[in-house]
Image (tube, rainbow over all chains, first blue to last red; front, side, top):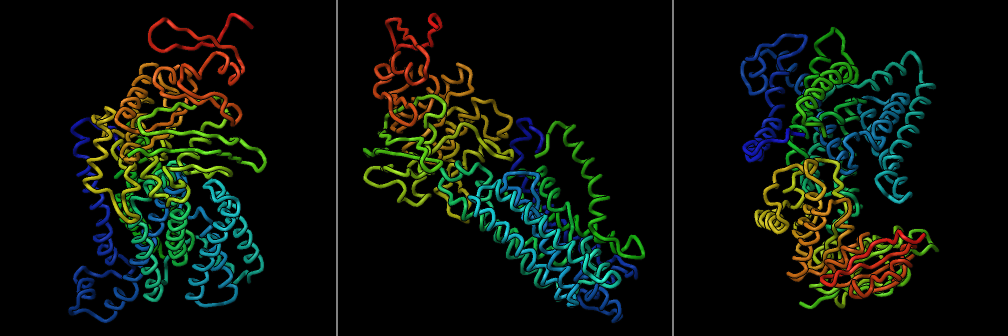
Length: 344
Length: 261
């Protein structure tokens, strides 16, 4: 939460908030361009520019930029957008800032789908599709289970936890029976997250899901604010609470499942990014959604840049988000609390 | 428009077979302030939630004029009846202005955003409860009395002719109780119909046009507060003896008896 301002500060808040939101929303663009320069083979800015917008450049450089780096960078940004925006929406409707995008068991379901696909020796496209479907299946089950028990928020969270652990056990079962030399390492690496070997073919469905989910949630931005009230209050204000909540969950699940199917399991982004965005622009989803999207894309992109360039081999994303992200945000968190602002 | 909000023979059960309301009748007209009293668990809040349409009675009906409340779509219903809960239950720190704007929900489309006109109505509502100076303040930086008034302003922004308040005087110091209840009194004078629950019989005696005393889901006494809230009726409702004090001017007051065991 922002500091309780003095009079002058308060009057400028609407302007400042709009400014910060715009900045955060545009933040990924320069980062995307900058990230194109990074990689094991050094490319000059003019080479990258020429590859992107046409010009004199070697075929290898052009292929590297357009076929390898660009799809991966876009995929990383979109995964960040999806996890952060769905996290913000879920925190809103579950009225709990500790909820994250994987609350309904999406990533366990996706993990099961991916693991099964690997055991059945389907190619990367098959793994992505199965992971996506697995994620949808898990969330669908959690919603069904939740509504069978009355559809309240608490039972929904509980059924998410149940479905999550059930699917995790199924993943372990698949790992147990997987070929320990060929399949098991693949499954284990998938579970640690990463966006290596992403092709345009993988980015396109992700981009479609991202646009659908983000636009849908942004259209519902003010209704999302209302859903953060207690169920009785929201109903008394004339909202079809259960129906709206279902739409939001459906859109959030689409976003999460699409992200996880490309990146594997990446923790933490869907929890902390919405927090940080809320601390910067406040809880109104008109600002929170674009701010979360920009911040999520930027942070995941930074982590993915480290993942692909820091060591000779790829570093799994989930390891980076945990090892670097958690301490950094802990420091921010402490600073915010010392300033007397609290953190919501 | 002379329109009434009427509960006719309303019964409700949370668990099948265990009625918490037994055929309760209640009528509120515009310009009326009705207080609902009764011990904890006597069914006050349940009746209030039936009256505002977020619960449907298992028997009987709630009528808005000639129309059954449950037959109205939720958005339409919210244009007629507004509900003021005891606490603002948001998980996030919205500002006072944002919170009051939420009251415009029935007037804003599903993909819409409150307009400038909505904002003006919200600010007018804030003005009516005397909090126009606090519009930029986050909700969690307000006192209990201010929060209560913000919720009332939110309900006013809804522009519904009927207002249902759950314990508007609870957890407030005497000055804030008076502040909140006299704001409500003034709104009733402007033509709102209000039903408020309370645990303080003196609130009903001081500010109410009518008192309805519930016991175990049934109406025990009703009428003009000083007639309905007799020592006998209160003793039966709460299970302890009461005495009525009257100094010859203004409404009487009641206190529990402490002299007899």
